[in-house]
Amino acid sequence: MLVAVTGATGFVGGHVARTLLRRGHRVRGLAHDPARAHLLADQGVELITGSLSDSSALHALARGADAIVHLVGIIVERGPATFTAVHVEGTRNVLAAAVAAGVRRFLHMSAVGARDEPGATAYHHTKGQAEQLVRTAALSHVIFRPSIISGPESVPIRTIAQLHRRSPVIPVFGDGRFPTQPVWVEDVALAFALAAERSDVTGVLELGGPQVLTYEEFLLAIGRAAGHPRPLIHLPLQLVRAVARAFDLLGPAAPITSDQLQMLVEGSATPENAAEPVFAIRPVPFEEGLRRFL
Image 1 (cartoon, helix red, strand yellow):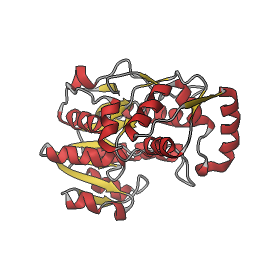
Image 2 (image 1 turned 30 degrees about the vertical axis):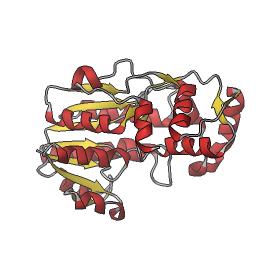
Image 3 (image 1 turned 30 degrees about the horizontal axis):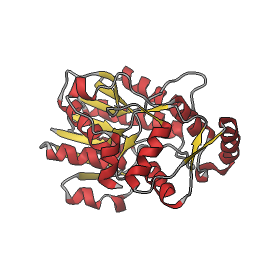
Image 4 (image 1 turned 90 degrees about the vertical axis):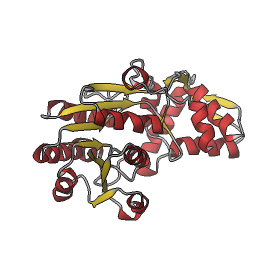
């Protein structure tokens, strides 16, 4: 099977590409930055240079492919790379190329909390719009909604680990009880590969780890795995919201934005976790995964 992957040089994309190769598939990846693509090329991934707005690159990516894995997403807007441009228009462009090329399967990366509803953050709003585009396309599809993804390339987790090593205390927003269900990146990659292979699996599927953790437990687990657990200090949520609104003025340089805080407080548990019942994947516990790279 030939599987095309957008975001092949990103955090999840590299793991998906390598998992597909190990399972005997051919992989073609879309690379926005060729300088980051040489490792995948050395491992046997065919690379197409281009972006989600480059129709010729997308048609080259989709040509002859049996399935497309669409992973490209952003958590911070930078210049023309807005949530609408990347999540909505980018997905629309990839779908158009897939339909034109006769691709049979479309596997889409969304997020827990994605919804096109009032009150949703711009991130969740555009993720919800992208989901609707996938649902209405003439393609067999799976939409994955993973919780927080843990792995060696996770910048937020490595940042928290550095805080445990360098700071005397770790700040917790509010009571820290909002739920998370972090999932190991290799488990996510395997789910995508299996979904590409199994035409009987369709629809919207959540992916999470084996445990629901409060945000406080999430922070403590990272400290233990980093070998320098620090005490936690709770900050009033109203104060953090005010600080986040001020940080919004910094744009991409903001350490946390109002939207990111809202998504954190909303939580990312996956009560309908499909990892084991649908794919027979026994998810790696969060702290076990952390010890592998911290």
